[in-house]
Picture 1 (spheres, one colour):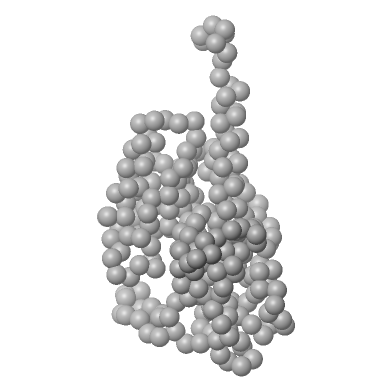
Picture 2 (picture 1 turned 45 degrees about the vertical axis):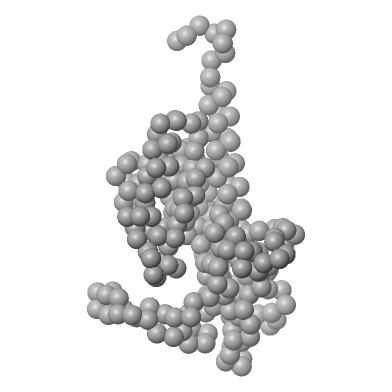
Length: 240
């Protein structure tokens, strides 16, 4: 499995974003896969148009995985490229997906009544676009703007914590704790993080493949590897 650094492709990076630079390690990893031809392989990366175009040109199976389909209470979108059977299994799972198994209300159990509180992303500014979607700049995000209820998937978790908006008072109540960020990302409640640095914990959580999604990828890869192993002739069998 590979997760090449995504800083040059991430929309959260407004300073040094460079798709050409961001795809270099992606292409290197794909070249390694092509050379080694393993039983199964997978790669996770941000959902960027340049990446999808590259995978299509190289005829590599991929899908845009939706984290909420795997019990993660946030609307994280990530490209997963992998062995064709793995991609097909993940696509089939998403196609038959039922309502999310977990929602933010399960994480923020202290926020009651639920109708009073809403969740905002950690962004401080909102993009301003003109005709045809042309980028015109940014403006300060208003309190509660683009907020979501506790019963719908939260915004994508990134290193800057999201905010809880008190709709009754019309003001921000507080930011997410590191533990809440981790649970929104799909980490178990008892997972141990670095107690000495909130910054390192936030970065680890933000950069992680949501554990339930990672588990699904590994599970399908193991099934495919076992299928190939069962189909391999024994040494005593004559060659076909």
